[in-house]
Length: 523
Image (cartoon, rainbow, N blue to C red):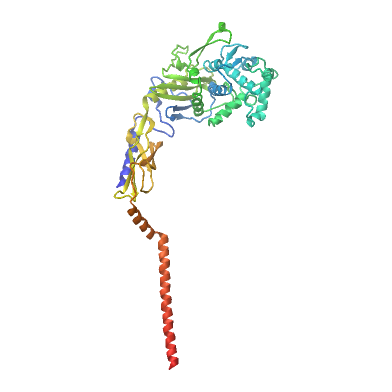
């Protein structure tokens, strides 16, 4: 009867899950029907890959082609921020001068740049803003060269006797020293404006998209990606210009962004819409850098589209012909925070003509609306809820022990999901023996929704139960008398007794025969 009830409950739960409103759990995250938001995003989806994470629970809520390796353009600068912040001593106050080599190496690349001149000096904090807000490739390259100069002069990285002292780092040292002749002499307050290494190479030889063999900074970018578990990411430059070996995934970009958000200034920098700045000592050269993230600004753009999303808080955009339009966006509403990576919205059509529509921003806003309106953190099990029972041994007048949830369990679920759609499976022993203390863990309960495990909770004893020594003695005695070894031993003893009786019988029979023989002889 109990088995029949369990089968019926499972059937009803699956049926309820199948009937829930258009969001159901998939292999990872939840399914989303893009047709539900045609008013705001009539031709979505636009991108090749998506990955969306709820930061409050670390729950993946949407994923599509999340592990496909794709070019990510200026999303690269999120990692550049990490490496610069973690490797430049006192980065907020470090003074960094713009070298001529930065201009020379970006000529003809079509780079997005921050508005400054060779020889201008900025603090490290200013350079972070100029890299992230207007997406300045020149700012990213300047920071990379500054880190390389610190490494070349022995200020950083010299404790790494392994990879940092290998073949790749030797070329790094040479390149950095040539690019900054003053660095080797101890002047590390700025990067030199000369670049002997670049000028000595022909334009055909120099590749502005690949610094992987010459830059310690790029080496650090790849090491950090590996440290964060980003197995499908590889960097060849600090700014994101296209290179076949420069790629990432939607999942990895969210992983990198989540880490970056834990660093000082990052969320402040990436939420800035307009940044006022001027070189150190030259207030007369004050300028304003505007964000490339149109989700943050309610401005009128020439393309005729509006991308403003009032709950957006950052983070970074990226685009070039090969990558298309890309974005890692964050948003917060009513206590919930999400980060989504949208990669590969077309930026050019089949004829090579530019596409004005930023589909990646439309898609990000669509997913935010869906998540904020359709998902919620729900307590599916409260501490103390009765979830199972288990046979109890050695307890007086008590045959079963009730097991309850040892803690509260809250998970991210669609708001439409009924509690009956959540299947609870318990893992408990065949029986337990008294004594048992209240709160003692006995097993676990696993909760799943539409085939996906959503939580596991410890099952604990609902009460303390003392041991009955008499029942224990009787039970143990019974178990001894019925144990295989006892039965074997008793069988052996019984066999020996039978053999002994047989031998006695044979012996006495022989003795009677001997007495008969003697009597016959006496006659």
